[in-house]
Image (cartoon, rainbow, N blue to C red; front, top):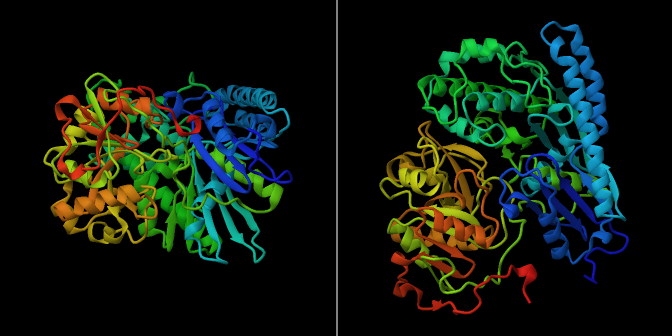
Length: 612
C-alpha cells in the first residue's frame, strides 16, 4: 500500500452506514467513487448492524490506500439533529393522545445521540488522520439518488429529488430542487420537509410486523401480498390514518402511535387492532383479512407517493424526478408515479435504502470540499468486490463438479431453455437489494411451473411472491409498457398482450412486472445470455431473482454461492469462469468445446484483491 490513488491535495472520503441496519461503506478517492459495499454481503448476516470492517478493507485495498490516508469520514446521520428532535418531543406532552409517549420518545432520541457520538469515537480510532463529519440523513439519500441518475439528466437541466423513508434524524420526507450551474457546480434547495410522526416508512413497517413479517426486511412480501387482496375493506381506515395535505401528508397517532425509538413500544394502536385483525404469528396461515389489509395499505401508500411526486413537480417545475429512501423500494408505487405524475423520467438509485447513504454521505462531504460530485456514480450499480481469479477444485463441495468455460453464454441459454435454474456469480457485486445479473438466479419464464419451483425449492419463500423479468432493452417495449429504461429493476411496469400470452410467469396477479432492462454496455454476459436464449426460444426475456435463499443476503462471496447451490434446488451456477453442477447433472454439451476440467489442486479460491 505505498501508492495512493488520490493526489495529496485531494480528499479521500470514506462514507459509512454503521451501527444501524444495512451497514455499508463507500469510498471516494481520486475524484471517483471507488465502490459501495454492503457488509451483509461479506459477513452473511442480513441487514447487519455491524461495523463494516470487511467492506472498508476491500475498498481501501481496491484504492491501494491505508486507513491513515483517509482524510475524511462521512457518517450518514448528523447526531446533533437528534438532540433537536429530543427537545421537540416535549411538545407532545400537550396532546392527550401523545402525552404518554412524549418523555420516552425524548429519552430515546437523546440515547441515539449518545450512541452516534460513540461511533464517532470509534471512527476516530480507526482513521487517526481523518476529520469526522455527520451528514444529514435525507441529504445523503438525496445526493446518492441524484448522482446515480445523473446519466439520464440532460445538460443544463435540473431535477426534483424526492426522499421518503421511515426516519432520518427527524425528517421522513423531503423535496429538493437540484440544478447544475454553468460552471458545473451543483446547487440544492430544500423546498419541503415533512417531519416525524408523519412517516410512510413507519406505517408500512408497523403493518408489516402486524401481519407477521419482519419490519425493515419483508415489506416487499407485504407489497406482493397486497395484489391478492381487496383494498376496499380497509380503505377508509387508511384514508383516516394518512390524510393528504397541501404540504404532503399526516399520520394519525390514534392508529399509529407516536414513535419511540425502542422495540418495547408497539407501532399500532389497540384501535387499529380492533378495527382490522389480531397480530398474525409468522407461522400462521395467511387469511383473506391479511390480504385485504395489505392491499389497503399498499393502495394508500401509492396514493400518497403520487401526491408527493406531483407536489415535487409543482414546486420545482422540473421534468425529471429522482426518488430515494427506503420507501422508494416500493416498485409498485414508483410505477404509479411514472404513470400519473407527469414526469419525463423517474429514476431510483440501485441502493435507495440506508446502505446507499454510505455513498450519499461521502458524496455530500466531497461536494462540500470540492464543489463537485465525483465520477463513477452515474448509472453505476456494480460497485462491490469481484472474484476474477476464482480457483476451484474439480469437486468444490461434496456432490458438485466444476469445469472451466471461456464462452458460457450459449451453454447457459440452452440449459435455461431446457428448464434448468441457474445461478450467476460474475463480475463486481451489485449495490442494493436487487440482483442485476452479477449475483442472480436465472430461469426460463416459458417453463411450466417455474414460479412454484423457484419459490418452493430454490428461494424457500411464500407462494404468492412474484419473480422479476430481465429483458434486452431494445425489445422491452414488446413486452412491457414502461416508456423509459429500468436498469436497476426499480419500477413495476404494465405488460403487453405478448407478455401475457408468452411469458405469464413474470406477470404478477396485479398485471405488473418489476422489469430490468439491460444492454450489452451495462452487462455484456447477461445481454449475451438473453440474446442466445432469444435465438433458441424467440423471447429475450428471463426470470431474474437474487442469488440467495430466504433469510440470507445476496451471495457476496464464492463460498456463499457454493453454499447456495448446494443447499437449494439450483441445477447449476456459473461462478467466475467455472460451470458448477450437481453430480447427477454434470454433463457439459458439445456447445462448450472450450471447457476444461478444473485442476485437482487449488482447492481454495482467492478473490482478486488477494491474488498473488
